[in-house]
Length: 434
Image 1 (tube, one colour):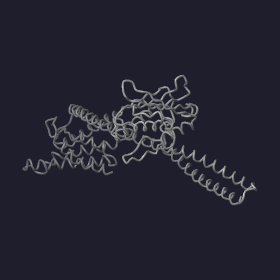
Image 2 (tube, rainbow, N blue to C red; image 1 turned 180 degrees about the horizontal axis):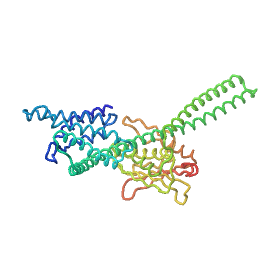
Image 3 (cartoon, rainbow, N blue to C red; image 1 turned 120 degrees about the horizontal axis):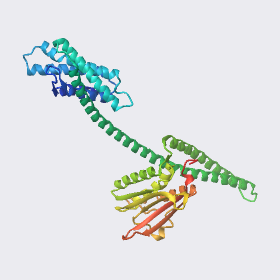
Image 4 (cartoon, rainbow, N blue to C red; image 1 turned 180 degrees about the vertical axis):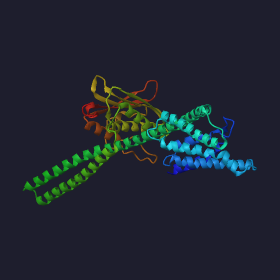
């Protein structure tokens, strides 16, 4: 509403000023000015303020400005003569605003051709109303030739304004779409993180269930073992442990249920084309690399025949690997992301992330997927949690997939080419029936 008020006030200032840039096509007091296209532009831009009101107030502002201007430039002219000279202009703006409102020019959806044709008709009608008032005052009647000139000028002015206005709308539409895309990406990445945590929480729940069961079985065994001293004491301890783990499991189940509900609520998109997913991963990690002051070139190779894939599973797997590659780079390098079917096996999806960073020492390749392994340290020398690759393997294996590490020397360079490749059954990533 504040923007509309500001535009409305600007209209009352700029329309009278633009009206001073004018021509007199009929060698009389009638003028064609830039005030009309400026007024038309403001009417297109202003919402929630009736165009008829804008027409009345703009007409008053234009007449008052012209009278004041003539009063100071030609101080000898009486007020009645100035009012007769400029007063008919009020009817032009009043009729223009009224017809603009009656014909609902700002109706949605916006159609440029409809608005252009109607605006020409409105300007002609407004000009006829002004000419009629002037004819009643000075007897200079309007005819078909005058109306033709007015219509021609109206067409030029209206479509000039529409061209400018459409450029603004197009730019706003592009900016809106870009903002929407960025917002969608942020939500997808956030939900992907939540999805990753939910996978780990699900695993924790199964462990808690197993511990509860084993503790209860231990309680039963202790109760039946008559040879054990203080068996009742130990049996009660085992039962108490079983009860405590069961409470932990119930709390975890509530958290898991809430997390699952949140994921469903926030995720409007569950499946996405492979190309879009790959581009999202590249954009995200390009920004991440820039934030770390690293110059990294990304490439993307996607099989166009792949069906839509589950967004959060793919992001959990590939985004983790790509982010690890970005972090492993020293200053510059290249990262190649591939999303394809396994050669010769169209029912198996293959994801790979290849970088030409420092690589992984031979002696440590067997431990990269273990909890706590890391080659990354912060500025204070504190190690990373090292859980990224461990998480990736856990998720891949839970989906009946595998992850492997391959490392080779890059041709004609002293760099190593490190590839993490994940293979998964395609049915685990696609919608049922696809």
